[in-house]
Length: 337
Ligand code: SF4
Image (tube, rainbow, N blue to C red; front, side, top):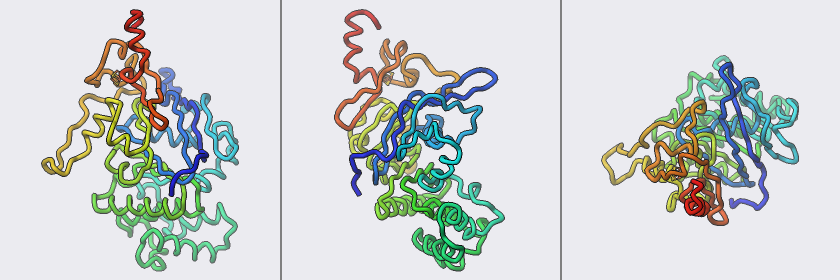
């Protein structure tokens, strides 16, 4: 399914601070993006770049305090989710916007059967009777590829393999026919063969149901499999965005270029890849100027002093880097940098 021109969800200048005893820590620093109806949007970056926090913040799922949501807006069906009350948010969470988390085993309740857990979400969010909900759960299990769905209904999470547990999580997320599904590293805990199956399943379901998908991963290779558009995050900011094909074939930001080099290549020795040198900075200790400058091979004087803006490079692509900002040359000429 191709995306429509109307965003279904818009994050505008989302800032998130953690208020701690030692002070204010900026975790998100002005994140803005649109999610269109029926599209699959990837959010990629190393661990600690702000991907998961961005998605949890959309629905205010981080406890406040320490999370401070004061700045930014999230528009969804005429609501600003950052200003919405708990009752409105509860209706959206799990009903209209659903999550699939990384660790299925820790997200599932060990003392309830898998059937009852999925049924519970149907009973909360829809007007179904118990027999209707049970029949729907079996149908959902079949749809997500759980064999012997009728018998599996009465099993407990520990009786299932990691791949089947993740399929149960997907069934639970889909139960209320959400318009948006947010999948946070849903394949990371699984072995490679099962990872491929789960990515294929999500891709099929997203296309068949026409839902919008946000797929979070540190792995650009996985994002390439499933996403039409990509946001690259670093240190709580979007540093590049664009259609997946542009990001992979012509990455503009030095960080994206390095992330692409971390994808294992089929023609290189088994399992070899080039890791990015250095560490992502902690939010308490962000470098001045461009947060990537200590790790960037292209660093210039201005990068250490001034924060680059996210600038549109073409109708669909944006980059936050002084190399792609014409104003840095003017600054050089006027001696401001
Ligand atoms: Fe590298 Fe400078 Fe661009 Fe940052 S702004 S990515 S340091 S070239």
